[in-house]
Length: 118
Image (cartoon, rainbow, N blue to C red; front, side, top):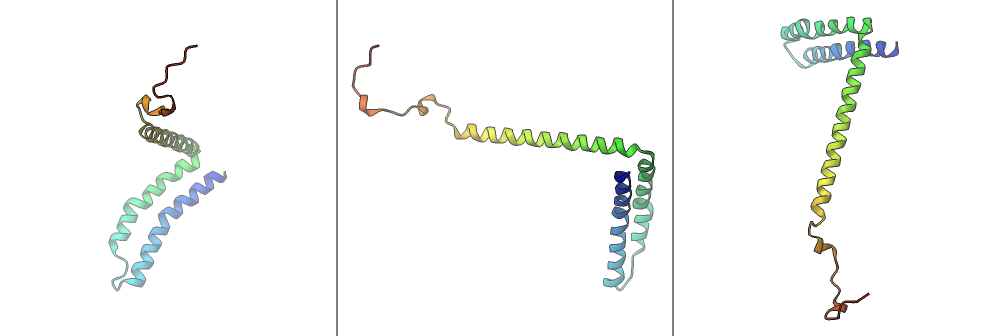
């Protein structure tokens, strides 16, 4: 129930807050008042989009939608983590010399000495 109410309130806020801010801006800052285009855009596009969400929230289909969004978010996080691991691995490979001779330290003390026989 809490998620449903939160989604309903959030959808209302996402629709109406920008409209209210634009209306206040044009009323206070503009000499012309609120342009009719603002009303038209909100009436034709934004408010109907919000109305389309209401049946989803009230029917309980929002649970599936939230699960799908969370699963997509987790997949995105896993892909991002894997990509970061690959980048770190590539950086480490670039820093590590590929030549095996580079890993040995020359020892000048035994130069010219006969090899040890076991």
